Image 1 (cartoon, rainbow, N blue to C red):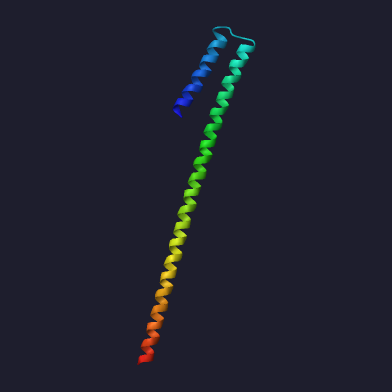
Image 2: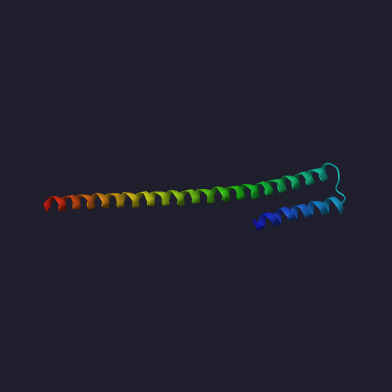
Amino acid sequence: MKNLVFIVLSISALSAAAYTFFNISGKTGLGIVFICGFLFGIFLMNIRLNMKNDKINSYKRELEKESIASDENSSRVKVLESKIEVLEKALENALNNK
């Protein structure tokens, strides 16, 4: 990321220097400005896409954590229900044997 910033800034600085100090004008100057603007636009869109991808990935991780937690809770409930059934049968057998 830092390399990309350095490249864009160096190209922008070179184009500004070429445009002002070497008096490059006309189609060449416009071409340099267009290329620099195009590269800067790509750079900005890359930053924006990376931010969106980071948000999407963090949201996916959050959803996975929630689904794991809900699965864990449902398995705990099933275990408790089976324990209750076993205890009820044991109580019923104990009452019948008296």
